[in-house]
Length: 234
Picture 1 (cartoon, rainbow, N blue to C red):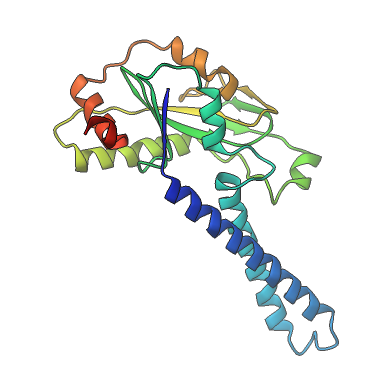
Picture 2 (cartoon, rainbow, N blue to C red; picture 1 turned 90 degrees about the vertical axis):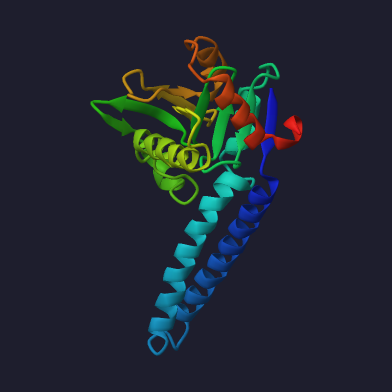
């Protein structure tokens, strides 16, 4: 399997994560010190602003860190590379090359991968996603995002990519197929009724191998390959 990455994108987001995280940490310390000082009442608003901005900056830094830097959760691009390792060179996995973060070009399909980093027992029941965390959720609220709505996230990713293709390849029919992949090693996925396929990374290869043959045309495949890996078709 061939893998391409937008390394500039990864490195810039990694730097942003560190800048926001350490700036937020510094603001929280300043706000805390002011609130504990004798002038706390006089500088109450400054302290409050520092604390609020510190929290916001730390959360922004955490967002980028979880996706692009080393942290408690596995990085999406590294984990997907390992999970899909073993396919032949007809498969091309691309990270941050298109409006969708992760896409897999196979001989007959284009998959939009929505990578989720949550741990625990993840279920899709009665049209809703559930990831009860209990004490773990309390202890990791700053380092782990809530599960949100992966189905909606996947639909948005597909729509964004379709608009991109309509603008750049108006005469080529490309129908991206979404799949939700949970990448945390401690995640347990129970989502057989999800309208969009949702699986754990360790089952991704078998799932792809058992998929029916898609309808991606040769013209569309070649256009995508040139877009994702232009040097290979020069």
